[in-house]
Length: 97
Image 1 (tube, one colour):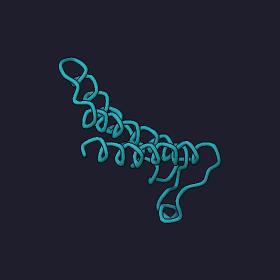
Image 2 (cartoon, helix red, strand yellow):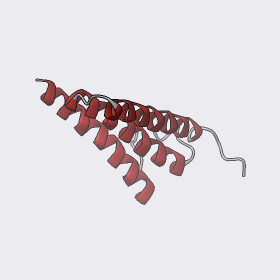
Image 3 (cartoon, helix red, strand yellow):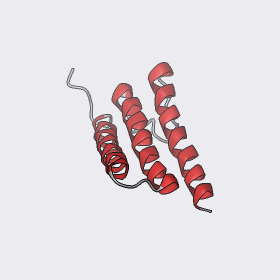
Image 4 (cartoon, one colour):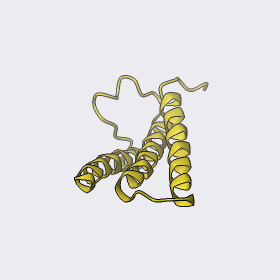
């Protein structure tokens, strides 16, 4: 059951990352996010980093690593998630220029 839950989470978070890549390549974002997003590049990068960070957390759930692998996956996932969240917040502020 643990692998099913981890697989569903991994698919969702990878879809978030792919959505960020699509946003970077084509400029398309979800219709419910269009009124709030003012800058597309930070938004796309934020989605990629957030999806990658949450995928690291899902890997911890799925594989139960021990020792240094656990610490590095959790630390890497936390850093990616924090950077992605900051970029998603920056995307909602208008550009200075």
